[in-house]
Image (cartoon, rainbow over all chains, first blue to last red; front, side, top):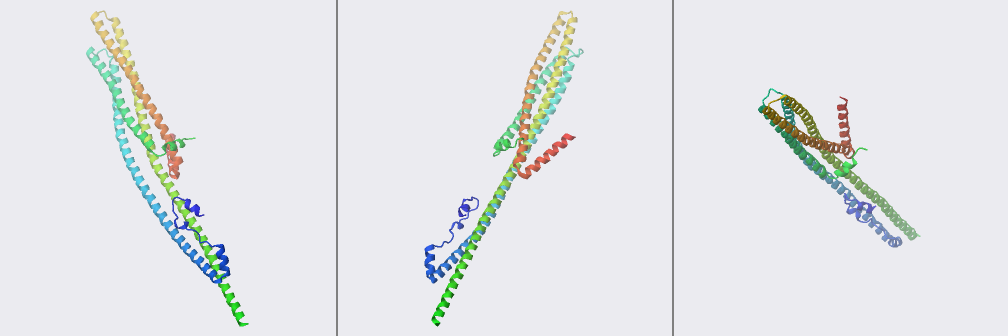
Length: 186
Length: 195
């Protein structure tokens, strides 16, 4: 039983590793032949046990205090961790809000560009326009088409920042690999 | 006779005292055993409580971290989807523009056939060539737009898959809190689908 206690790691029961008061068989035999010795021996054992019981009571009290302290430490560690998570969340949400706003602008710009390209392309069939006007329209369509690609690339860059940050956050999470592998739907 | 009786009485008294002490010694030993067992139980109970506390904290931390990651991953997939839709719209518009330019080129060719004047023909030929160049450029840009579309499509797929994995990880590894979160999410998804 003592080995069992020692093997536990969270709470240390130092005092109780002291051995149980023992009685020696030969001394018992002698003490039975000597009544005074027997009384002395019995008294000594009683005192030993009482002392050991006292140790155990102290140990129980100490263990309870130690456990309470451990719970407090755990609560504090949890609070610190939660604060860190909340701070990270705020940074994350701010970052997302910023990039979402950028992507909103990109979305609107692209819609406007495509609408203009569509209108201008139709104008190329208008025979009332002069050659110069058509030249300007062609150049504008070409430029807008390039601009649309370039804006798309900006969107890709913003998207890549989001994707990389999320991927990094995923990889930095302890045991995320196991969690995500185990968490897959059957 | 009297000394014998006194001796016997003393002997009995001593024997009684010894027996009494031994009994007391036995009782106190039982008390020691019982205290010792209490101590073992106390240690086991506290260890169990501490382990449960640690598990609860780990589950809670994992829950908060994973729900934040779920949010990030969902947002990335959502934004990628929006960009993919934009790219899809741009591709469609580019096709429409190319068709309109093709129609304009056809009109120019028709006009060319009816022209007799050499100078006018040359000017029109230049216009046709410029318009053909524009068409070529739009085709080339279309290819870039398609690349962007495929990139966004890949990201939507990748982050949808991650979002889904995180969702099941929250359900399976974050205790009761995770299960409740998963059920609420599924309920919202079902409600959205039924509308």
